[in-house]
Image (spheres, rainbow, N blue to C red):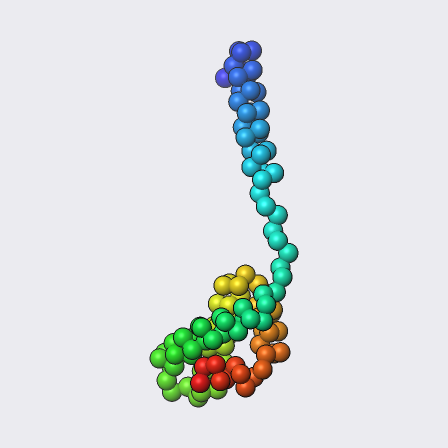
Length: 110
């Protein structure tokens, strides 16, 4: 197809307009914030609010599993949930679990 000079000019103008529309969008996109671990209080709040629900779910699904296996599976599910909920990595959640008072963790869902 052969374009006339005015058609080429219109295409160039349209292309420039599209590029100019895209440029502000690209510059207004926020850069991803660096990951900062949530406070221990946020982890505790999520643990005390949600862990029992995951333990109940695992118990309903597999009541014959030993309690240690059910707790392990519930902790794994809670870890994945907590990472998404608090927008942090699962390794940060596991690090908090390792440093948290284990007796308090058990008491929170007992």
